[in-house]
Image 1 (tube, rainbow, N blue to C red):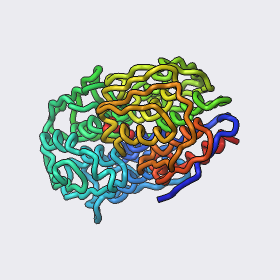
Image 2: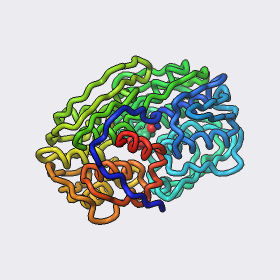
Image 3: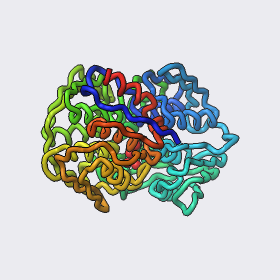
Image 4: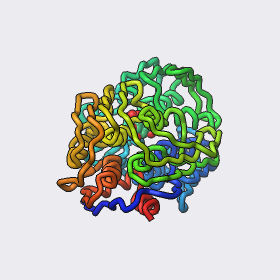
Length: 431
Ligand code: S3P
């Protein structure tokens, strides 16, 4: 366990920053690169613990992958049939995205594959993927049909699937797209709510086809993808820490360069806009994954109401919206967010417990929060704890800046899961 002394606010956050590459897109770039023909080069890749798990898994499957600074080069296997049997279990660490997407991608292999993960990942539900994959013909044995460790058994055949996803989850959707590409007939998926569509966009970028309309997705069998040269935009989920800091820490003005603005991910910007915040977006790119520079400064906020339909577009940013809501005038109510209970930690519990150490007025509900805003946070009266959850750790670092005063963060190493340069980037904005 690493405990760090949290940086204190001196005079706001100021300057320009390029945040690291998007985690979801980085994972998928390795996956598409691995099954494509030829070489894939990925620039501005996120070299974080989670994404390194995906790279390690494909290396174990015999895919040549080299890394250099922020670039990854993948020599594709030209389809799904040319992997090697790993000599050891694939260790997914803390990475839910690696685990769930690979369950679909590896659902039809001529050998058994074992997967293991850390203590937190081994408590996160997998039946949401195992159940539909089993309907397709995949053979998976997992602890209580739901948890790591698991074995994906030899399987020669996958059938197309007609499926209404019972949870709004891009990980489940993506796993089923990967399996659907290897099935012997079309699959039709209906999402509960629209979730991040990076898999669908990247499939087109690599030369594949997919029919999509709103929540309906039709996947046809295909395996002929062509390697690409990609640039990963900045991760809006990482930028979000500085966006909320920029709004809530007095005397701040920050520009975040080339942040991904995929419209299935910009819920944090929509929520802050509804809370009365204004920001400027410039230098917009119109790539398959759009991006732009976001400029934000400190300003007053008012409360808002979020319901289930709002959550997928900001699912990883809800802890930050709760923090912003503590500073907003009025009462914020967030409902329909029960998925937060099965993230890296039970984020409804950990956010409430940790922010209460600053005197925040938050009540947890089974599916969300009630936050009485306008509270002047005081320095934390006990050590803060990430609980091993990267996003909780970083949110607490921002809360500590808002509260003023010194603070200690326990289990700070979790931040490496998605943002290994977080402390340097924060220091740069404080310089
Ligand atoms: C992700 C989807 C989301 C998100 C996670 C990354 C992805 O999970 O919370 O950090 O890359 O598909 P769910 O799909 O389970 O909501």
